[in-house]
Length: 153
Image 1 (cartoon, rainbow, N blue to C red):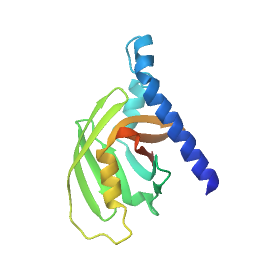
Image 2: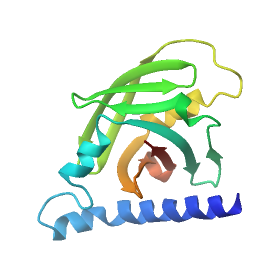
Image 3: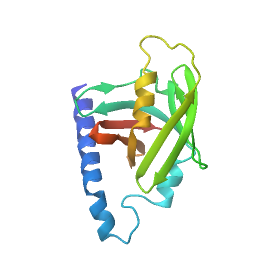
């Protein structure tokens, strides 16, 4: 558990540094978003991503016992499909380089068990501000430096 905590903290700091310096990298590059390419975006969109957990800047975390019950699929037409534990839902997304905005607008209303992470999952998705890949995993940074969500195919 301590090793996992160190790894999440390290990835959190890397993502923070990336967000801090990405505007500078954009200025000194050829104008394309640093760290992104057509291949990266095509890997992001259309795939079903399973939530591995969220690590927050206050050193707390939410980790689902069953990642298959928390999924995210970004459609090429700007729609979003999710599974949030016992509910399904959707909304919209926009991509601009490494920036992302997700708006979950509707879900089914089944009553999930008391230990469900449905609400934190949806809250974190609605707060997504930037995305990046690391070792094949997708990371979504949450607005206001609040934390980072981790997904795996």
